[in-house]
Amino acid sequence: MDWLGNVVFEERELENERLELTDKEANYILGPNLTLKNCTLVLKVSARRLSLKRARFINCTFEVKQELKNYPYWITTSLKGCRFKGRLSGCDFGHWPEYGKELEYQLGSIEDCDFSEARLDGCRFHGCDTRTLRFPRWPCFTFLDPVGNSRELSTVQWPGNIGPVVIEDLASYPPSTTALTWFAPDFAKRSGTTPEEIKSVIEQFDCIVY
Image (tube, rainbow, N blue to C red):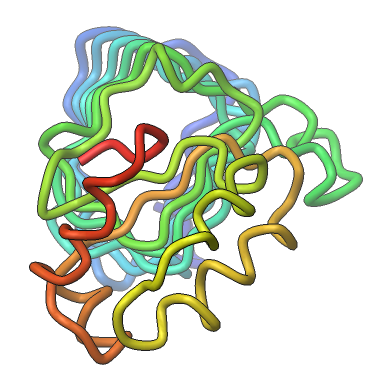
């Protein structure tokens, strides 16, 4: 750590390492030109303390010990064969070059990753083949191709305010959006309904994984 409180991993390749990013006072910077293979990363910091930039993660495990909120910068990384555990909300993964003009936004990707042990809420996936991903099951649920399926999803009556607040907004999502995952208990609470009422609707669609 330098005098600014930054912990920097860059310009190197690490394999079979365990990195604990847990110091509340540190700023963790991963990249540029960092490759991690078969590593375990323990994350217990807020989004503002974590910077990802042009890093590659291959067969790594992310153990998120503190909910990571509103973090779009996974799109600056390449994720292949990785496993996620813990709570993530408002995160973006994959290839979304339109997000910014900087080089790091052109290099993001995700494939063969497993979120089955994670709790995702309001997380989006971009520019990827969702068939290579394992999404968390109920009480999480995932819209596949939410932009393309937005018209079909709007043909039914959704409980609470989900219809006007969420479903009608799907068509305005970035065209790169290939999937969108929610955590039903929190989603229901915000929407003035119950998980059971939500499930009764999503069961009608083949484009929803739950």
